[in-house]
Image (cartoon, rainbow, N blue to C red):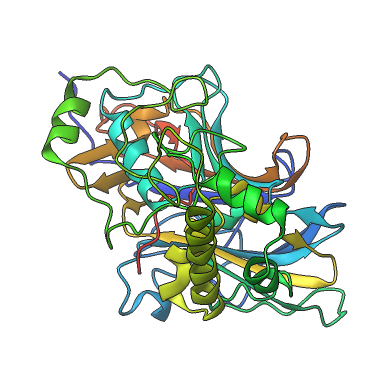
Length: 390
C-alpha cells in the first residue's frame, strides 16, 4: 500500500467579472484595491472579505488573512459592491441569484435550510432539485446593507469600504403621504397584502409584509425531526410547503377585510416605513419585511444619477471550511455541488441581463499516495445573501 502524503491545504479562489468569460481573481480583504467592473449595464467596484483567508491572490497581490472589519463582529465573510446602473431599474426587477449548471446532491434536510433561509429573507425563493438549481431573492430583501448617495459625476466613483444602512434615497418622497391619505388604489393594495403567507416565499410576485419575527431564526424540534425524514423538494410557486406559521399584515379570514382592517394594515406599513427611514443596522429586518411586498418593491426606482452600495454578510458560511452551519444542520458545500462551478449574479428577473458575476472555487484537502502528484479541485458555492447577522 502506497504511503500517504501530507494533506493538501484548502485553496479558496474568488473571481469576479461582468460575465462568466471575463472573470479575474480578486484580492480578498484588500479594501484599498477593490476590483473595478464595467459593462453597458453597470459600473462599480466589488470587494470580498473573508475571515482568516488562506486562498489565492492575483499575481503581485497581497495575501491578507483578516482585516479590522471583522473585529467585534460575528461575520465570517462579507461581499460588498457599489456602483451606478446605466438606466432606471424598478425594485421588482433586480435579483440576487445563486445558481448551478448541473443538479446538486442535496441532502434530505435541505428543506430545513431553505426554511431557515426564508425566515431571514422573506423575498427568497429557490429550486434546489431542478436540473439547473438556483437560490434567488430580490436585491431589496437579500442585502444585509443597502444605502445610496448622489453621484459626484466622476468617471469612477470613490469606493466606500464601510456602508451604513439608509434607504431614504430609495423611497419615494410621497411614500408616507400616499398612505396617510389613501386613495382606493392604496386601499386595494393593502387588501392584497393582507393575505396569508402559508409558505416560505415562493417566487417572483409573492406579496408580503410579515409579522415581527424572532431576533434569531429558530426551528422547532418538530420541524427538525420532520426535515430529517423528508425527501428534499424544491421550494417553488408550484410546490410550496403548507402550514407555515407566519402571516402577512393580518391572519386570513373567509370574508373580505373591513375598512377598519384595511386602515390597520396601512397603519402597520406606515410604522415600517418610519422605522426603516431611521437607518442603521437595527432597521434591516424592517426593510426586508417592507420590501417583501411586490407592491412596495414596485415603488422603488434605481436611477443612473445615484450610486448604490450593497453588502451581504453572515456568520453561518465559512469559506475556509466550505460549510454552512446553522442550528441542527451542517452542509458540506463541496459534496453538495459535486465539484461544479457556482456563481453569484446580480441580474434582472428574467436573467437576460447580468450586471456582474462572482465565482468561487476551492481545492479541498485530500490524502493522496506519495507517488502521485497533483490536487483534486472542486468548486464551492457563491457567497450568498444567506442571512443577516451582526
